[in-house]
Length: 290
Ligand code: NAP
Image (cartoon, rainbow, N blue to C red; front, side, top):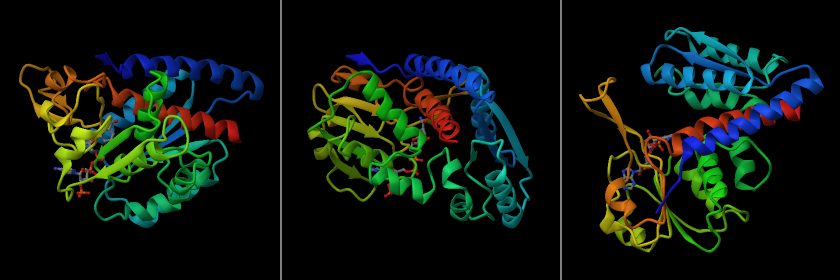
Protein backbone atom coordinates (compact mmCIF):
# COMPACT_ATOMS: atom_id res chain seq x y z
CA UNK A 1 0.00 0.00 0.00
CA UNK A 2 1.23 3.48 -0.89
CA UNK A 3 0.03 6.45 1.13
CA UNK A 4 -1.13 9.36 -1.02
CA UNK A 5 0.59 12.08 0.96
CA UNK A 6 -1.37 15.28 0.35
CA UNK A 7 0.71 17.25 2.81
CA UNK A 8 3.99 16.50 1.07
CA UNK A 9 2.54 16.83 -2.44
CA UNK A 10 0.83 20.14 -1.67
CA UNK A 11 4.10 21.48 -0.25
CA UNK A 12 5.86 20.56 -3.50
CA UNK A 13 3.17 22.42 -5.47
CA UNK A 14 3.40 25.42 -3.12
CA UNK A 15 7.17 25.56 -3.67
CA UNK A 16 6.58 25.55 -7.44
CA UNK A 17 3.98 28.32 -7.10
CA UNK A 18 6.32 30.44 -4.93
CA UNK A 19 9.01 30.22 -7.65
CA UNK A 20 6.47 31.18 -10.32
CA UNK A 21 5.27 34.14 -8.21
CA UNK A 22 8.81 35.42 -8.03
CA UNK A 23 9.11 35.22 -11.81
CA UNK A 24 5.74 36.91 -12.40
CA UNK A 25 6.41 39.71 -9.92
CA UNK A 26 9.90 40.37 -11.33
CA UNK A 27 8.32 40.75 -14.77
CA UNK A 28 5.22 42.75 -13.83
CA UNK A 29 6.14 44.33 -10.48
CA UNK A 30 2.94 42.82 -9.12
CA UNK A 31 2.10 39.77 -7.04
CA UNK A 32 -1.02 37.65 -7.54
CA UNK A 33 -3.75 39.02 -5.28
CA UNK A 34 -6.52 36.96 -3.67
CA UNK A 35 -9.41 38.52 -1.77
CA UNK A 36 -11.50 36.48 0.64
CA UNK A 37 -14.98 37.56 1.69
CA UNK A 38 -16.01 36.34 5.14
CA UNK A 39 -19.56 36.98 6.31
CA UNK A 40 -20.11 36.53 10.07
CA UNK A 41 -18.07 34.52 12.56
CA UNK A 42 -18.83 30.86 11.83
CA UNK A 43 -16.00 29.00 13.64
CA UNK A 44 -15.14 26.61 10.81
CA UNK A 45 -15.29 29.39 8.18
CA UNK A 46 -12.94 31.61 10.23
CA UNK A 47 -10.46 28.69 10.49
CA UNK A 48 -10.64 27.98 6.73
CA UNK A 49 -10.26 31.65 5.83
CA UNK A 50 -7.25 32.10 8.12
CA UNK A 51 -5.64 29.02 6.55
CA UNK A 52 -6.21 30.44 3.06
CA UNK A 53 -4.66 33.78 3.99
CA UNK A 54 -1.70 31.99 5.59
CA UNK A 55 -1.19 29.96 2.39
CA UNK A 56 -1.15 33.20 0.36
CA UNK A 57 1.58 34.61 2.58
CA UNK A 58 3.62 31.42 2.28
CA UNK A 59 3.78 31.58 -1.54
CA UNK A 60 4.19 35.36 -1.74
CA UNK A 61 0.67 36.38 -2.85
CA UNK A 62 -0.99 39.58 -1.74
CA UNK A 63 -4.25 38.93 0.06
CA UNK A 64 -7.16 40.93 1.39
CA UNK A 65 -9.75 39.85 3.93
CA UNK A 66 -13.14 41.48 3.42
CA UNK A 67 -14.85 40.90 6.76
CA UNK A 68 -18.58 41.56 6.80
CA UNK A 69 -21.24 41.45 9.49
CA UNK A 70 -23.49 38.40 9.92
CA UNK A 71 -26.46 40.79 9.53
CA UNK A 72 -25.38 42.22 6.16
CA UNK A 73 -28.26 42.24 3.68
CA UNK A 74 -28.12 40.30 0.41
CA UNK A 75 -28.18 43.59 -1.49
CA UNK A 76 -25.20 44.95 0.46
CA UNK A 77 -23.24 41.74 -0.05
CA UNK A 78 -23.95 41.85 -3.79
CA UNK A 79 -22.61 45.43 -3.80
CA UNK A 80 -19.38 44.17 -2.19
CA UNK A 81 -19.16 41.48 -4.87
CA UNK A 82 -19.59 44.08 -7.62
CA UNK A 83 -16.83 46.19 -6.03
CA UNK A 84 -14.46 43.21 -6.15
CA UNK A 85 -15.44 42.54 -9.77
CA UNK A 86 -14.41 46.11 -10.61
CA UNK A 87 -11.27 46.22 -8.46
CA UNK A 88 -8.30 45.89 -10.82
CA UNK A 89 -5.90 45.20 -7.97
CA UNK A 90 -7.72 41.93 -7.17
CA UNK A 91 -6.94 39.00 -9.50
CA UNK A 92 -9.39 36.57 -7.96
CA UNK A 93 -11.64 36.24 -4.95
CA UNK A 94 -13.85 33.83 -3.09
CA UNK A 95 -16.92 34.25 -0.92
CA UNK A 96 -16.51 31.79 1.94
CA UNK A 97 -19.51 29.47 2.22
CA UNK A 98 -21.87 28.82 3.92
CA UNK A 99 -23.54 32.22 3.99
CA UNK A 100 -26.15 33.22 6.60
CA UNK A 101 -29.59 31.76 5.83
CA UNK A 102 -31.15 35.08 4.75
CA UNK A 103 -28.73 35.28 1.79
CA UNK A 104 -29.24 33.31 -1.43
CA UNK A 105 -25.83 31.66 -2.03
CA UNK A 106 -26.59 30.89 -5.66
CA UNK A 107 -27.40 34.53 -6.36
CA UNK A 108 -24.06 35.57 -4.85
CA UNK A 109 -22.12 32.94 -6.81
CA UNK A 110 -23.84 34.08 -10.03
CA UNK A 111 -22.78 37.69 -9.34
CA UNK A 112 -19.06 36.83 -9.19
CA UNK A 113 -17.15 37.73 -12.35
CA UNK A 114 -16.31 34.28 -13.85
CA UNK A 115 -12.82 35.62 -14.67
CA UNK A 116 -12.24 36.15 -10.92
CA UNK A 117 -14.12 33.08 -9.67
CA UNK A 118 -11.12 31.21 -8.27
CA UNK A 119 -13.40 28.79 -6.37
CA UNK A 120 -14.68 27.64 -9.77
CA UNK A 121 -18.31 27.63 -8.58
CA UNK A 122 -19.80 29.96 -11.23
CA UNK A 123 -21.99 28.04 -13.73
CA UNK A 124 -19.86 29.40 -16.58
CA UNK A 125 -16.74 27.82 -15.08
CA UNK A 126 -18.53 24.57 -14.21
CA UNK A 127 -19.80 24.47 -17.80
CA UNK A 128 -16.31 25.04 -19.17
CA UNK A 129 -15.05 22.23 -16.93
CA UNK A 130 -17.74 19.90 -18.29
CA UNK A 131 -16.64 20.78 -21.84
CA UNK A 132 -12.98 20.16 -20.92
CA UNK A 133 -12.05 23.80 -21.67
CA UNK A 134 -9.40 25.68 -19.66
CA UNK A 135 -11.04 27.09 -16.53
CA UNK A 136 -10.86 27.45 -12.76
CA UNK A 137 -11.57 23.96 -11.46
CA UNK A 138 -13.31 23.62 -8.08
CA UNK A 139 -10.65 23.19 -5.38
CA UNK A 140 -11.34 19.72 -3.97
CA UNK A 141 -11.86 17.88 -7.29
CA UNK A 142 -8.75 19.62 -8.65
CA UNK A 143 -6.80 18.49 -5.58
CA UNK A 144 -7.92 14.90 -6.19
CA UNK A 145 -6.92 15.03 -9.85
CA UNK A 146 -3.52 16.53 -8.97
CA UNK A 147 -2.87 13.86 -6.37
CA UNK A 148 -3.63 11.06 -8.87
CA UNK A 149 -1.41 12.82 -11.39
CA UNK A 150 1.56 13.35 -9.06
CA UNK A 151 1.50 9.67 -8.07
CA UNK A 152 1.15 8.60 -11.75
CA UNK A 153 -1.91 6.52 -10.97
CA UNK A 154 -3.49 4.95 -14.04
CA UNK A 155 -7.12 6.07 -14.43
CA UNK A 156 -7.86 5.31 -18.12
CA UNK A 157 -10.39 2.52 -18.53
CA UNK A 158 -10.69 2.06 -14.77
CA UNK A 159 -14.03 1.91 -13.00
CA UNK A 160 -14.29 4.88 -10.66
CA UNK A 161 -17.13 5.00 -8.15
CA UNK A 162 -17.80 8.41 -6.64
CA UNK A 163 -19.89 8.49 -3.45
CA UNK A 164 -21.74 11.80 -3.09
CA UNK A 165 -23.02 14.23 -5.72
CA UNK A 166 -22.51 17.65 -4.06
CA UNK A 167 -21.85 20.54 -6.41
CA UNK A 168 -18.47 21.22 -4.79
CA UNK A 169 -17.04 17.69 -4.61
CA UNK A 170 -18.82 14.59 -5.94
CA UNK A 171 -20.43 15.91 -9.10
CA UNK A 172 -17.39 17.82 -10.45
CA UNK A 173 -15.05 14.97 -9.40
CA UNK A 174 -17.17 12.55 -11.46
CA UNK A 175 -17.02 14.86 -14.50
CA UNK A 176 -13.23 15.22 -14.25
CA UNK A 177 -12.69 11.48 -13.85
CA UNK A 178 -14.79 10.81 -16.94
CA UNK A 179 -13.31 13.49 -19.23
CA UNK A 180 -11.10 12.67 -22.15
CA UNK A 181 -7.78 13.52 -20.46
CA UNK A 182 -5.30 12.26 -17.90
CA UNK A 183 -6.24 11.91 -15.09
CA UNK A 184 -9.63 10.92 -16.44
CA UNK A 185 -10.90 8.53 -19.09
CA UNK A 186 -12.36 6.43 -16.30
CA UNK A 187 -15.73 4.75 -16.50
CA UNK A 188 -17.54 6.64 -13.78
CA UNK A 189 -20.46 5.71 -11.56
CA UNK A 190 -21.83 8.61 -9.53
CA UNK A 191 -23.66 7.38 -6.43
CA UNK A 192 -25.74 9.10 -3.75
CA UNK A 193 -28.17 8.42 -0.93
CA UNK A 194 -30.76 6.89 -3.30
CA UNK A 195 -28.32 4.39 -4.80
CA UNK A 196 -29.62 0.93 -3.94
CA UNK A 197 -26.64 -1.29 -4.83
CA UNK A 198 -23.74 0.76 -3.51
CA UNK A 199 -21.95 -2.18 -1.91
CA UNK A 200 -21.98 -4.15 -5.20
CA UNK A 201 -20.69 -1.13 -7.12
CA UNK A 202 -17.92 -0.49 -4.61
CA UNK A 203 -16.88 -4.13 -4.78
CA UNK A 204 -16.25 -3.69 -8.51
CA UNK A 205 -14.52 -0.31 -8.26
CA UNK A 206 -10.86 0.22 -9.19
CA UNK A 207 -10.95 3.75 -7.79
CA UNK A 208 -13.27 5.00 -5.02
CA UNK A 209 -13.78 8.69 -4.27
CA UNK A 210 -15.69 8.86 -0.98
CA UNK A 211 -17.34 12.23 -0.35
CA UNK A 212 -20.46 11.67 1.71
CA UNK A 213 -19.48 12.93 5.16
CA UNK A 214 -20.19 9.73 7.13
CA UNK A 215 -17.25 8.61 9.31
CA UNK A 216 -15.81 5.16 8.48
CA UNK A 217 -18.69 4.42 6.06
CA UNK A 218 -16.57 2.46 3.55
CA UNK A 219 -15.42 -0.75 5.20
CA UNK A 220 -12.96 -3.44 4.05
CA UNK A 221 -15.71 -5.89 2.99
CA UNK A 222 -17.00 -3.31 0.47
CA UNK A 223 -13.76 -2.97 -1.54
CA UNK A 224 -11.66 -5.23 -3.73
CA UNK A 225 -7.91 -5.88 -3.47
CA UNK A 226 -5.75 -3.24 -5.13
CA UNK A 227 -8.37 -0.49 -5.00
CA UNK A 228 -7.29 3.18 -5.07
CA UNK A 229 -8.99 5.10 -2.26
CA UNK A 230 -9.52 8.85 -2.22
CA UNK A 231 -11.15 9.76 1.07
CA UNK A 232 -12.61 13.26 0.97
CA UNK A 233 -14.68 13.01 4.15
CA UNK A 234 -13.77 15.12 7.14
CA UNK A 235 -16.14 14.77 10.07
CA UNK A 236 -15.22 16.26 13.43
CA UNK A 237 -15.70 13.72 16.21
CA UNK A 238 -15.21 14.38 19.91
CA UNK A 239 -11.80 13.24 21.15
CA UNK A 240 -10.91 14.32 24.66
CA UNK A 241 -7.30 13.16 24.18
CA UNK A 242 -6.77 15.99 21.66
CA UNK A 243 -5.98 19.54 22.69
CA UNK A 244 -8.75 20.80 20.39
CA UNK A 245 -11.23 18.30 21.89
CA UNK A 246 -11.93 16.72 18.51
CA UNK A 247 -10.32 14.90 15.62
CA UNK A 248 -11.11 14.60 11.93
CA UNK A 249 -12.42 11.26 10.67
CA UNK A 250 -12.70 10.27 7.02
CA UNK A 251 -15.46 8.39 5.20
CA UNK A 252 -13.27 5.29 4.94
CA UNK A 253 -12.28 2.83 7.68
CA UNK A 254 -8.61 3.59 7.03
CA UNK A 255 -6.91 0.84 9.10
CA UNK A 256 -8.77 -2.10 7.56
CA UNK A 257 -9.24 -0.73 4.05
CA UNK A 258 -5.53 0.21 3.80
CA UNK A 259 -4.69 -3.52 4.05
CA UNK A 260 -6.48 -4.11 0.72
CA UNK A 261 -5.76 -0.83 -1.09
CA UNK A 262 -2.93 -0.14 -3.54
CA UNK A 263 -3.07 3.60 -2.78
CA UNK A 264 -4.99 5.44 -0.07
CA UNK A 265 -5.28 9.01 1.24
CA UNK A 266 -5.04 9.58 4.98
CA UNK A 267 -7.43 11.88 6.89
CA UNK A 268 -6.13 14.36 7.77
CA UNK A 269 -3.19 14.96 5.42
CA UNK A 270 -4.69 13.68 2.16
CA UNK A 271 -7.27 15.61 0.15
CA UNK A 272 -7.48 18.54 2.61
CA UNK A 273 -4.05 20.10 1.91
CA UNK A 274 -4.50 19.44 -1.82
CA UNK A 275 -7.78 21.41 -1.69
CA UNK A 276 -5.98 24.35 -0.10
CA UNK A 277 -3.25 24.45 -2.72
CA UNK A 278 -5.82 24.37 -5.56
CA UNK A 279 -7.06 27.83 -4.59
CA UNK A 280 -3.49 29.10 -4.93
CA UNK A 281 -3.18 27.48 -8.37
CA UNK A 282 -6.39 29.15 -9.53
CA UNK A 283 -5.30 32.54 -8.18
CA UNK A 284 -1.98 32.28 -9.99
CA UNK A 285 -3.87 31.38 -13.16
CA UNK A 286 -6.15 34.42 -12.73
CA UNK A 287 -3.12 36.70 -12.30
CA UNK A 288 -1.38 35.20 -15.36
CA UNK A 289 -4.49 35.66 -17.51
CA UNK A 290 -4.53 39.36 -16.73
P1 NAP B 1 -22.79 17.07 1.08
O1 NAP B 1 -23.10 18.31 0.34
O2 NAP B 1 -23.41 16.83 2.43
O3 NAP B 1 -23.13 15.84 0.14
C1 NAP B 1 -23.07 14.53 0.60
C2 NAP B 1 -23.42 13.61 -0.53
O4 NAP B 1 -23.32 12.28 -0.04
C3 NAP B 1 -24.84 13.79 -1.07
O5 NAP B 1 -24.83 13.75 -2.47
C4 NAP B 1 -25.59 12.59 -0.49
O6 NAP B 1 -26.62 12.09 -1.34
C5 NAP B 1 -24.48 11.55 -0.41
N1 NAP B 1 -24.77 10.55 0.60
C6 NAP B 1 -25.17 10.72 1.87
N2 NAP B 1 -25.36 9.54 2.48
C7 NAP B 1 -25.08 8.59 1.56
C8 NAP B 1 -25.10 7.18 1.57
N3 NAP B 1 -25.45 6.50 2.66
N4 NAP B 1 -24.75 6.52 0.45
C9 NAP B 1 -24.38 7.20 -0.66
N5 NAP B 1 -24.35 8.54 -0.73
C10 NAP B 1 -24.69 9.22 0.37
O7 NAP B 1 -21.24 16.90 1.35
P2 NAP B 1 -19.93 17.56 0.67
O8 NAP B 1 -19.96 19.03 0.88
O9 NAP B 1 -19.70 17.02 -0.69
O10 NAP B 1 -18.82 16.94 1.64
C11 NAP B 1 -18.66 15.54 1.81
C12 NAP B 1 -17.59 15.30 2.85
O11 NAP B 1 -16.37 15.83 2.37
C13 NAP B 1 -17.81 16.01 4.20
O12 NAP B 1 -17.28 15.22 5.24
C14 NAP B 1 -17.01 17.28 4.07
O13 NAP B 1 -16.60 17.80 5.32
C15 NAP B 1 -15.85 16.78 3.29
N6 NAP B 1 -15.13 17.78 2.50
C16 NAP B 1 -13.77 17.75 2.58
C17 NAP B 1 -13.03 18.62 1.83
C18 NAP B 1 -11.53 18.56 1.92
O14 NAP B 1 -10.86 19.46 1.45
N7 NAP B 1 -10.97 17.50 2.48
C19 NAP B 1 -13.64 19.56 0.98
C20 NAP B 1 -15.03 19.54 0.90
C21 NAP B 1 -15.77 18.64 1.65
P3 NAP B 1 -27.94 12.96 -1.73
O15 NAP B 1 -27.49 13.91 -2.79
O16 NAP B 1 -28.86 11.93 -2.24
O17 NAP B 1 -28.38 13.64 -0.47
